[in-house]
Picture 1 (cartoon, one colour):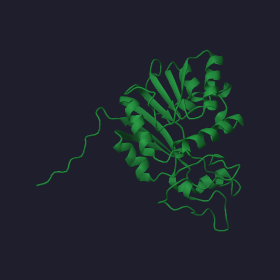
Picture 2 (cartoon, one colour):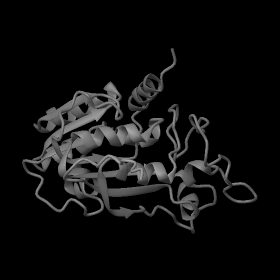
Picture 3 (cartoon, helix red, strand yellow):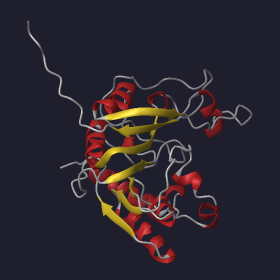
Picture 4 (tube, helix red, strand yellow):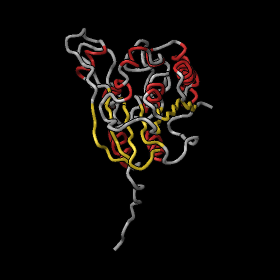
Amino acid sequence: MFSVHDHNRDAWDELARQHVPLARPAGEKEFAKPQFIINPFGWVDFELRGRKVLCLAAGGGKHSVLFAAAGAETTVVDISPVMLDLDRKAAAEHGFKVNAVEASMDNLAALPDAHFDLVVQPVSTCYVPDIALVYREIARVTAPGGLYISQHKQPGSLQTSLRISPLGYTLVEPYYRSGPLPPAPDGSALRESGTLEFMHRWDELLGGLCRAGFVIEDTFEPRHGDSSTPPGGFRHRCWFIPPYIAFKARRKMSAPMERKLVVT
């Protein structure tokens, strides 16, 4: 029986074996300036030492070891065992303790309730069909008042052609679509080869986060665009179509109240 979970696990295992950039552990450059990985938007405004941090869907040996180096009690979750091996090896090499858990971001049953002070998730929600399940699980494991910092692929970018045409970059996917996106061409800097990706609408990205019990405190669009670069390249496309969005969200101190219909 076909499984999106199994497909993407195998795809990321293979990408890790190919040593793609996302599967390269932290090195001297990252340890010299760890804030570019652990606090790129300046949203973590508290001491990390002793804090419980979850690096969600963040295997590869970067986030987990850098948070551990800052003194956090760090857990990393990833669907790919090969990616998690990079975290274990990097932690052992630098003498850090990291808890590595193989799980899908939409099923965190292995993690305790209301445990983490900070959940950090790099771009990855595109690999699951239902982002509401991801948000529900993150809300469950985040302590009241805890922070959830995440990045996502913008729906407009996933709708738009990766290659330029005489008309420019064109919409090729409907906004109200279901199922995975067509396979990405090899060599794309905006899509990961071999994976199944899903487009989530703005209501799902933003409204779903609020409905799960979070308050959005800030947003940020990382700027990758450069109009002076050759047409068709990553930076040229990003000048016209922002690829990513980041959210700073705080877990409400109490669970969201159930809405009740009042009949008079």
